[in-house]
Length: 148
Image 1: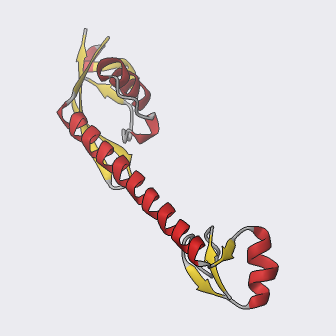
Image 2: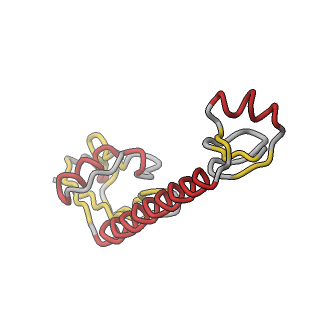
C-alpha cells in the first residue's frame, strides 16, 4: 500500500514522502491517526504544491532575514549610562536593553534571546554583539557604551 505521509513518522519517513507500507500498518495505524493518506495522483500533486509553497515562503523569509542582517551590520547603538570609578557602569547593558534600543532607534523588533550577548556589558567601550536572525543567518551589531 502506497501512502503519502502528512506528518513525520518515526522510523518511517518525513512529511511529504511517499512510502510503501504493509496494508495493516496503513489501514490500522497511519490512516486512522491522520499520519498519512492513500497516495493517489491528486494527493501527491497537492503535497507537491504544499511543499513548493513552503519552500517559497522559507526562501522569502530567508531573503528578508538577510536584508535585516545587512541593516544590522551598518547600525551602531549608543548607550549613555552613569559610570563610577574605572569606567564601571552602575548597572549593566543587557540583551533586553539592546533589543529595546534597537526597536526605539531603528524600529526593528528582535527577540532578546536572539541577541548573543554572553554576559551583560558592565564597562564603557565598543562591543560587537552577534545577532542570530534565523538558522544560518546572523549579523553583528555594534554597541557603544559611553559614560555620562
